[in-house]
Amino acid sequence: MKRAWTVLALAVVAVAWTGCGSGGSDDGNPSDGGSSTVAASFVADEPAPAAGDVTLQEGSKSANTVSVLVNVTGVNDVYGASFDVEFDPTKVEYVGHSAGNVLESGSHKPQYLVGGSPGNGRIVVFASRVGAVAGVDVAGTGTLMRLSFRVKAEGSFPMAIEVPALLNDAATPTPITGLTWHAGSAVGVGS
Image (tube, rainbow, N blue to C red; front, side, top):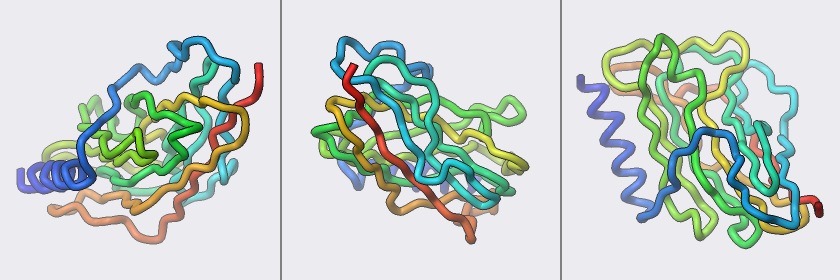
């Protein structure tokens, strides 16, 4: 029980500290992109992740909206994650998030919080299993969660991951060491 309260307290502090605002949850299928003059995609900084990598990868896409997968490769004892994603808000807009398959292991219902200042180009992401359950061993590559973005212009727009932490299932979850985090770029191509 102490673990759940600690993780929840960290999430509340992280979201409150960065200010108000959040994106809604969606089903991870960016089908509501609306009319646009660009077709969206995402180019990963690390297209072939190795063990110990946490990467942003392209998921589904529709019109000017792309789903970005937050993938974990070859990491044991994953209980949660916390990180910020920075982007150019004049070119890219955060539109929502949805579950992946890592934290849901064993039919678990994890907690997802995404807040921060999307209109200013920064989202604060927190995802965690809840309660006295074990962390998940990710043997290959698994998806922690999906983040959806709308691309508003032609060009390539780098995203950055800041203050990343993948957390273990210790009584007080602590960051897993020895990981490499890789972001990527949202891309808009004239359609």
